[in-house]
Image 1: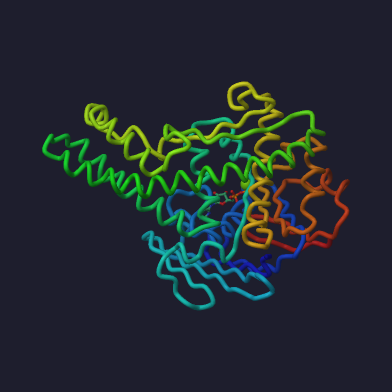
Image 2: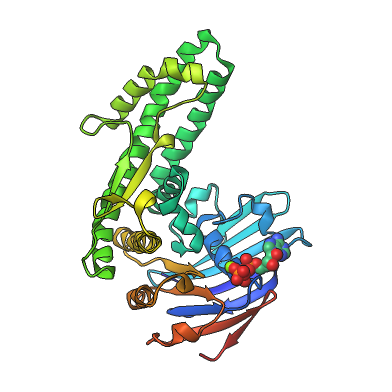
Length: 365
Ligand SMILES: Nc1ncnc2c1ncn2[C@@H]1O[C@H](COP(=O)(O)OP(=O)(O)OP(=O)(O)O)[C@@H](O)[C@H]1O
Ligand SMILES: [Mg+2]
């Protein structure tokens, strides 16, 4: 799939933007704070209905305006799709696909798939489990609306259970048992999907990582959960929730479940988060991003659009070349502050845009 056209009104620092994107590599060049990431953010927003960086939708609306508008024309399986999102300063939004209003945000998932890779993503390798869970949740939402449904339900019940635990009344035990039945049903499904995703990630990553490191290093992943393998995840999660009820009542919080899970990333058997060198950590995240790209291709039949925000300058020449050689069939949107080093190894046609203070000018490549 690829994006043909992007139209923005009052999105961040763009009052109005109309650009035709190239099916191959598109490069947006500009100094700092000109609006490069804002372009990628608008594309990401058109894909998932959420920003990759702003927690509140209203932050996307130009400071001097009341509403923002994002429109994307996408070519998918040779069919055209028009995605439109209106965001209001009060925080509400409306999404249309092919001029039909969506009832649920999950109806947007899969219309346009993107993989975003930015320097921030290093947090997936280096920082707390929440970053890794978020990565898994986003990738699985792109692949499966049933995953999203179970995750949303799980989080709703979890919040209710935690509210009861905070208020801590002993006659609420019956209520907790009802929550635990629901939590184990939704949470068990979430865990099963995640384990399946980690297995796919491992399979794809080992090939990619082998390529990048000339098979000198072997990357591995393992889903980390208290729920033991072998038995039914749902039954085992219920058993653990029941077992931990007393402790949870004392601590006033739910201590077990997919909201506490994690996954490990190791290279040659050594934990990358604690012991990996900077270069190994960067290679790991590059591998994970490309593996997720290939998983999307395998599951949906089409490559997603790849968004590279300022990452090339952070990688050594070998890794930059690896990226460039891997994206021949993938529409890619790259941002950077200069093009000189990229041009030396680009061997395909590219479209270059200059970004200056919320204006974009197409350049001759
Ligand atoms: N809601 C908004 N309304 C107007 N301007 C905004 C809004 N949100 C952010 N901006 C401005 O948009 C500008 C461009 O931001 P952006 O993150 O796209 O820069 P960039 O070109 O990617 O820079 P860098 O190279 O530093 O990453 C920033 O100066 C920021 O202040
Ligand atoms: Mg930026």
